[in-house]
Amino acid sequence: SAHMAALHESREVLKRSLTRFGETLRSTHDLDKILGVVLDTSIDALRASAGLLAVVQPADEGDGDHPGQPAVLTVVAARGVDPTTLHLHEGEGIAGYVALTGEPLRLPLDPGDAGPPTVPERALGEAPFATGVWAPVFAQGRIFAVLCLFDREDRVPFTAGDLATVLSLSDQAGVAIDNVM
Image 1 (cartoon, one colour):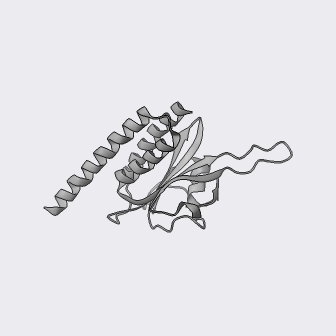
Image 2 (spheres, helix red, strand yellow):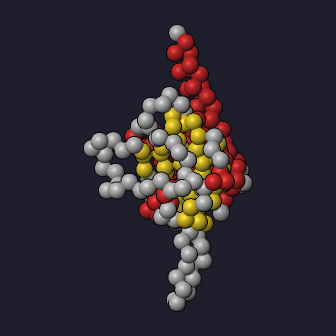
Image 3 (cartoon, rainbow, N blue to C red):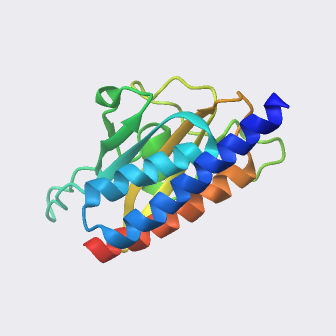
């Protein structure tokens, strides 16, 4: 049936995507390329319609009298979404919440989900999608980036399995980033 053919095709796409992901992580020392393939692979794996990857750039720490500024989220890769509208600091919006806490998030929350006590408010400039997965990428002993994925192509909400897949990809990415740095 057409449905089975489509399913097979999406599995093949994913298989190729994961192979490319592994090869890129092993072979390149180009950070931008690694970050790009992390986003592409995550979008393919979740069949998301859009996504972005934002690096958390620590501001200067300040000094005793002047506390430092909060870190800034800088979009380094985007697909299906305008990267120029997102200007967030750590702690602002959903991506900023993940950048600050290192807690992955999946929206909408499942009833009975142990999610955060209060879902952070979407910030101005965050993509207006109904569903999403946000995952931290840990590298260099800190929260290095936040991976944001939006609206599955089949319009079904993301599952706990989707979140687990992304966390596994972001773990591998973190190792590769550490190696490059």
